[in-house]
Length: 120
Image (cartoon, rainbow, N blue to C red; front, top):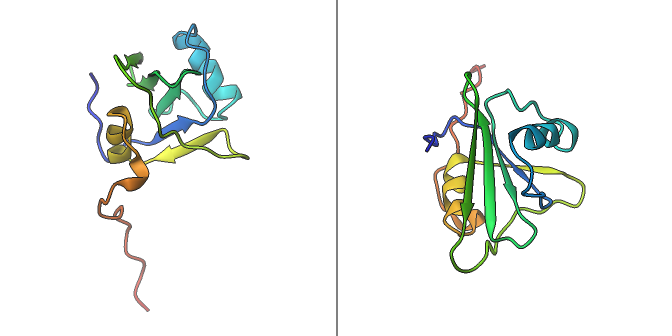
C-alpha cells in the first residue's frame, strides 16, 4: 500500500467508472475526461456504478500503482458531486475517511497551512 501524505494531490472522479479498465484505461480517462496528467504523481480516485468499490491510480516515478478496494457489505454513501466538474479535489485526510466509507465533509481537521504573504 502506498503512504498517503498531506502533500499528495488527491483528485476524485465525480462520475462512475467502468471497472473493467486497467491502468492504461484509467490513465486515458485521467487525460481525456478529468483533464489531468496521470504522470503528475497525483492520486486519482474512481468508483464503480454500484458504489461498492473504488480504484486508485497513482504514478510514483517508476510506474503506476493501481489499488482496488471492494466493500464486503454496504456502499460508499458519500461521493463528491459536481454538475459542471468531472473531478473534485480532496485533502489527504479526507481520502482516508472516504476509503473507510465515511463522509470527508464531516471531518474537523485543521485548515491546510498556507505561506504567509509579505508584510507591508
